[in-house]
Amino acid sequence: MEGQERLTMAKILVIGAGGLGCPALQYLVAAGVGLIGIADHDVVEISNLQRQVLFGSSDLGLLKVEVAAKRLKQLNPEVKIILHPVSIDKQNILEIISHYDFIFDGTDNFESRYLINDACTLLKKPLIFAAVSGFEGQLAVFNVEDESGIKTNYRDLFPVSPATGEIPNCSENGVLGVVPGIIGTMAAGEIIKLIAGIGKPLINKLLHYNLLTQEQYEINISPSDEYKQLDSKADFMNHYKENTSQSYMEINLQQMNELRNHPSTVIIDVRERHEFPQLDSNIYKQIPMAEFAGFASSEIEQQNIILICQHGIRSVAAAETLHQKYGETKNIYSLKGGISKWRRHFLTKQHE
Image 1 (cartoon, rainbow, N blue to C red):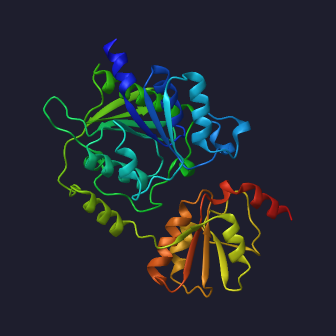
Image 2: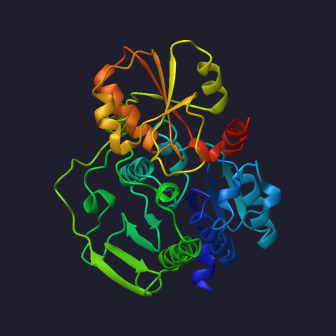
C-alpha cells in the first residue's frame, strides 16, 4: 500500500515518445503513477511502427504526444498526463524538468543526452538513462546517492560529447524493434523501484544487455574529475551558448526546393554509392562521406550548399566540415530528417 501511494504521488517526465519511451510509458501508466509528462515534438512516421508500440498506421502524421496520451488514457484514465509537444533545448529544459520528480531520457542522440544530463545534475533530479543500438541496450540511474552518499551522472561515464555525426544513432545504425521494448520496460522497472523504495536500482551502475546472447553485465561508475560541473543556471546557459553555436542551418523539404531554383545552389548527397533510393545525378551531386574530406579540400563555386543523407545525421557532420573551411562566407544547409523523412518526394522525383 505504501509503495502504491508513492507511485500515485510521483511526477515523472518521459523525454522521447519513441521506441524506449512507448513501453516505459505503458508500464508506468499501468502501475498507477499519478502524473506523467511526455516531451516530444515529432509526428508519427511509418518507420516508427516496428518499435514504437503506442502508434498504428492510422496515426501517421499526428503528433506523437497526442496519440500517446490518447492510448494511455484508455489504459488508465486516472493518470494525469501533461503534453510537451516541443523539442527539448537549452531554452526550455530547466523550466520543464523543474516540475517533475524523476526524469527518463529516452532520446536517441548525444546532444540531447548531455543536455538532459546537465540540466538534471544542476537541478538535482534523478535521471533514468536508456540507450539502444542494433541488438544491444544500456540502462543506468544517475543523480541518486548510493549507500555511501556517492552519486554520479552521465559525464562521469562519458565526460566529453562526441562530435555531431561522429557516432550513428538508431536511425543510422538500426535497431531490432524488440530491443527498445525490453530496455524501455526495464527502465520503467527502475523508476518504480526508485519511487517505491524497493530492490536495488542501478544507482552508479551501467547495465549492458545483448539480445543475441541474452547476456548482461554491469559496470560500476565512479565520480570523474575530467569535467567541471555546472553550478548555476547562468553557468548552464553560458556553457550551451559557447558549445552549441550552430555552423549550419537545418531546413525542411520546402525550403530545400526553394533554394534549389537559385542559380548558385548545389545539393550534395553524402550517402555511399550503394544506398537507395538512387537520385538523379543531374540534380544531386553524390560525394560519399568516405570521399568527402578530399572533396572539401577543393573549392565549391556555389553560394548555397545543401547536404543530404539518409536520415540527416551524416549531412550535419558534412556541414560542419564545410563550415570549418568557409565560415560565414557561404550558406551551408542540412536537410532535416534526410531522405527517409521525405522518402515519397525522392521516390517520385526519381521516376519523373
